Length: 364
Image (cartoon, rainbow, N blue to C red; front, top):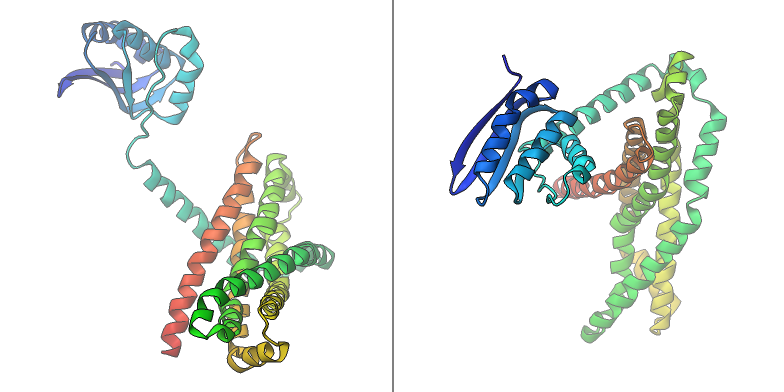
């Protein structure tokens, strides 16, 4: 029985050569003559290779496709070509000069499968993290206070100057952009209320989470990803240490501990920037402070700090998960850091929207 098959059909003036099975040395050899003959007969007409049913395409199969393309003498559309097979064709392309690069079309359903795989990995990571928390009393020796303090210092104290700078600029820009249109209606004093409530409720925690995602989450992904590439995680397992307890939990706890202080510092810096802008427009300091004290409540600040705790846990966990899921090769660490930043920011925005709906429902 041949391991590869070839079916030739016409579709709206285009000759379709549908390959199926294994395009290895045996399969390619079985259909070699038929493929070249069919491609030669299609000379001068559009030709498409349908590779959606190909289960394997090695060097022999790629050589067959290039030979059939050369026999056709024109541009061939490659449909359903897998990424490994496309990379193999590009490597073998110099052996077939004058042939055009294939128009690679991923098989249908690939991105849906990727989403399902990512969802399964996320559920598995959450399950392992929950089991690690439950087993933490028995593994307390793996959670070292010195490492926890070092991680908290890097995530909190190290990010404090950036948080202060961005917070001050945020308050300054918001106040400046709000005073100009509101002055037309004589409501420019209410800019202090607008900025203070927005920063305390939403923007402070949101910007602090973005800082954590870009600075701390990516660092965790790169660090753990490097350990995986260097097989240090396998060494931890060999020594009887649980990677989730030894690496993930300390990082999540450290970020959760420092996030409220980081958010509060950013809020204060934003209020200072807003005050500087209001003072530049001629408002006395007492009037600005009175507006803030009158309309910004403690609940606004507590809402922001509560969101910040959830954002911190999500960003730290996503960074660690990206590092644990890093592959092999020189690009694995960079790809893990990228996934950590993108995933952390997307998760932060989604959680913020969820909190907005939840708080509205609870207080309506």
